[in-house]
Image (cartoon, rainbow, N blue to C red; front, side, top):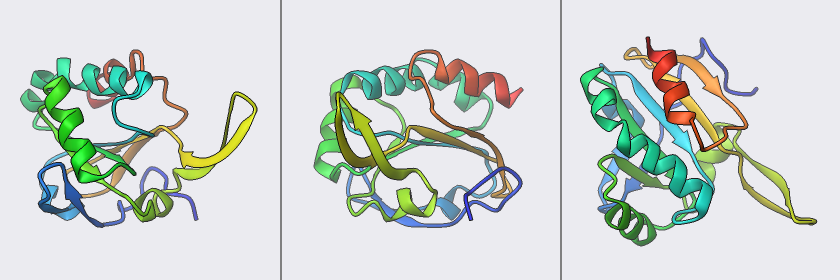
Length: 152
């Protein structure tokens, strides 16, 4: 069954960009923007991450945690985070099990080539752990503003 609004967000445990184990349930009590992206330091993913970075004070003022997930390794996340001074947590889903759990992993096409990868998707999760909104087929440019608007 696909993950959708009005469902309890499935809990998981992954390592963050500092190698620390994190659980989604650690964020209970505050809203969470959980965004899945394909790859560190690529044009679209950098645009999306930097937009969340640039609006980060708006998220913190609203009491919202921002968490990014991709199949990259912890070391890659650490470099990406440092290079672009990202103030939020990045989680490493190297075996893409959490991506699969959330239904954001599957067959993609790019320039005539087919491969398995992450569908750029964001889940807005309430402080009670319930999914409030799902943003599918996210366009990196302007997405952070779209999420902020949904928080109001």
